[in-house]
Image 1 (cartoon, rainbow over the protein chains, first blue to last red):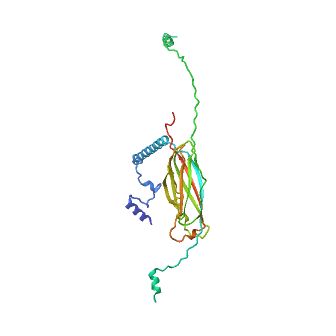
Image 2 (spheres, helix red, strand yellow; image 1 turned 180 degrees about the horizontal axis):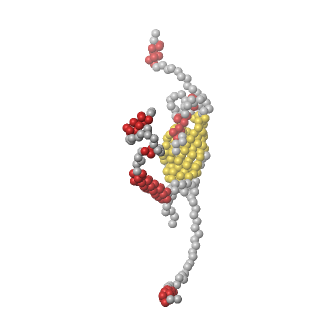
Image 3 (cartoon, chains in turn cyan, blue; image 1 turned 45 degrees about the vertical axis):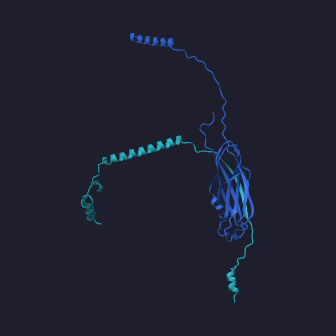
Length: 109
Length: 189
C-alpha cells in the first residue's frame, strides 16, 4: 500500500493527512486529541458506583459474618459391617415342553 | 503579682474550699461474694449393640433373611437425626458377572420397631443405597429407650438365569452418623 493509498484511506475515514510533506515529530501528533476532561464525569460516576457496590458488599458480608450462628455441631459415628454370601444351586435344564394339542398332533398318523 | 492574678487565685481557692465543704464523702461500704461456676459441654455418643449386622450365608434367589439391631443414645446431648451411609463391595467368586451388578438384586428393607409396631423406613436395592445417605431416625433425645431396627435382605428372583451370582459375596459397610440437636440459646437458669 503506497502513501497515496494511505492518504486517501485516512481522508475517507476522518482526517486529512499529507504524508508527502515532511513533518516534525510524530505523525500522530497531527491529530487532535479529545480534551482530557471530556470523559471525566463518566469515569468519576463509574468509580463512585464501584465504590458504592464494594461498600454495600462489605457491609452486607460483615453483617452476615458477625450475626449468623456458627455452623459447628457435634457428630458421632458408629460403623457396622456385614457380609452376604450367595449360595449354590443346580441349574435347571432348559427343555421344550409340549402342550396337549401339540402332543395330539404329533401322535396323529 | 498583679491585682488581677490575686483575684483569679482567690476565686479558685474559694471554689476549692466551697467544693471541699459541700462535696460528699467518697467513702462507701463494699462486700464481696464469689461463686464457683462450672461449665461442661455435652457429649454425643451413639451406641449400637452389634458390630456386624448381617452374617448371611447361602442366599438363593427369592430368599429373605432378616437381622435385628438397636441404636442407643448413650450421650447427654439430644440427637437431631441419625443418617445411614451404606456402601458395599461385590466379591465375584463364581462365574464372572460380566457387569451384572449383584447389588441391583439385593433388596434392603429397614423397619423401625416401636411400641410393637413396625414402621418401614425405606425399601431400596443395595445399589440404590450405595453412597446415598438415608435419614433413619428423626429426633433421638438423650436417655430415650433404644431404637430397635429390623433389616430384611432379599435376593430378588428376576425370573431369569442368575447362576453367575452363585458363590459371590457381598461385603457391606453401614455407617450411622448422629447429629446433635440444634443448640438452645436460653438453656439453663
